[in-house]
Amino acid sequence: MATHQFLTSIFPNAEDEQLLASSRTELHFGNLQDHIKCMMSKSELNRKPVLEAEEKAKQDGRIGSETVLVDISSQCGTMNIGIERMELESQSNFSSIRANVCACKDKWMYEVLLGSKGIMQLGWATIRCRFTNEEGVGDTADSYAYDGHRVRKWNMATGKYGEEWMAGDIIGCLIDMDAGTISYSRNGHLMGPAFEDIKRGSGFAYFPAVSLSYGEVIQMNFGATPFRY
Image 1 (tube, rainbow, N blue to C red):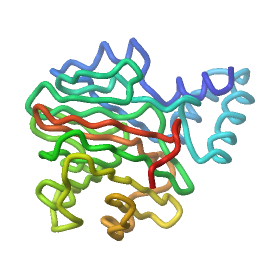
Image 2 (image 1 turned 60 degrees about the vertical axis):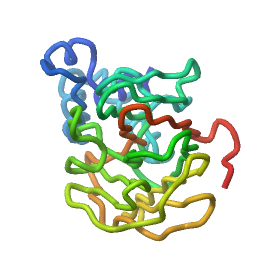
Image 3 (image 1 turned 180 degrees about the vertical axis):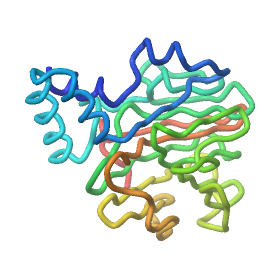
């Protein structure tokens, strides 16, 4: 019950989503503390469960479901999504999607098996990020991405980073919320920090998030099965 109320205070509900009039599902992450204060001000009955859920998030270092999957409601563009919600194939110019769990402290990673080798931007984003069919992960503030096709990193601006990837590669996407860094690996080889001093603190939590060009295919692993590397 506490976790449900806490998540409701953070993620948009159905009524909120109806207000988001755009060609895509707008991602909207508010200040964590503001949400908590708002919930507490509505009723003293909410104080204990919300505080308990907040404490649980601090202890776990994550917010969201126990089972990590891609969040279909966050999809921008069109994707074929596998029944287990791990396999993705873009069916539009530039499709984006995020997971249903975000990291707020500690160290986290996920792996991406590349089924193709084209333009993809893999990384992390807050729920505040607004994606379009032209702009994806790394093209907006508070989102960070690596693209091994162009061998570049993206956070509004872009710079050379990493190694060229090939179909069959496994890309590790790592975030260290304590140190404020985001790094990547290719087939187990760490390529060093791509981003340092990412925004942290109250209201900042990062979701695994990816953007794929038309026809690109990946399979994501959030740890339900052992990581390859």
